[in-house]
Amino acid sequence: MRDKIKNLKQQLDAVILAHNYQSAEILDIADYVGDSFYLSQVAKNLNNKTIVFAGVYFMAESAKILSPEKDILLPVIDAACPLADMVDVQALLEYKQKYSDYTFVCYINTNAEIKALCDVTVTSSNAEKVISKLNSDKIVFLPDKNLGEYIKNKFPEKDFIIWNGFCPTHERIRANSILTLKEKIKDLVILAHPECNKEVRNIADFLGSTKDIIEYASKTNFKNYLIATEDGVMHTLKNNNPDKNFFVPGLPAICMNMKKTRLDDIYFSLLHKKHLINVDENIADKARTSLEKMLELAR
Ligand code: SF4
Image 1 (cartoon, rainbow, N blue to C red):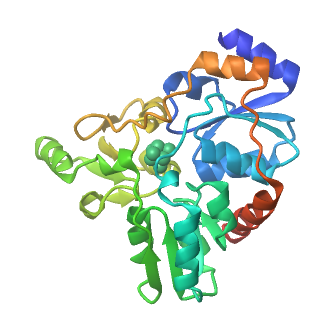
Image 2 (tube, rainbow, N blue to C red):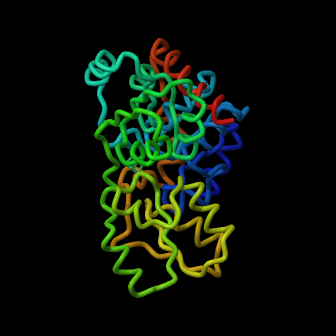
């Protein structure tokens, strides 16, 4: 299957982008692996005609918005993000009316219609930088309440209204599971994603995006790390650091949507050019403004 994928990629001048949360078999064949911010930059800058996006829907959609001339393929069309679906247009319009003098900042984990209604998009790796450059002290942040609270604490002088959404995968990670493991392994260094709940964030030694977590573990010289984010990052962490130990608290936190894509889905995606992502032009134009503002401010 790997050889077949390689051949088709060459024939079609295609590349495979994979999010850090994909399964190991996908990460191993991908041309580019990273977090949402990195992958959105890659998608925009590549010259290839076809991009296979191994991730969830909003990621492929963002790639299409940033690169409308390219064919963006999402191998599994129902790979969705429950967090992205926690904000709908009608509710957002009501917020926009109520907080008409606020700047609307949306996490990249939103659908195109939502990005189109927001002033700027952010990812977990650039939210602080982007918001620090906004000329506004009044922010509505959506849809992730955990990332929103984490960012709010960085700007005590700003007024934040935070949407009540959450990532079900990160929400499942419990502080008491972490503390139980820390009792057994005293020198455990806790690395957590800001989508984790407050109790987990409060006991973390380091908070950051998946890219930040992977970099931190590679650059520091501790022996034992606990990883509080989706389980997919363990593959890269272990590959990059064979002499270090990585633990998860309790059962691994697995995003079922991220794990829907298998090797044969990638193969059929290339073979039949499916599923081609299209975004309504009017919505795409507005969402592009929000995404491009992020790329500009995060530089
Ligand atoms: S891990 Fe959470 S935020 Fe990421 S795709 Fe899955 S549900 Fe969405």
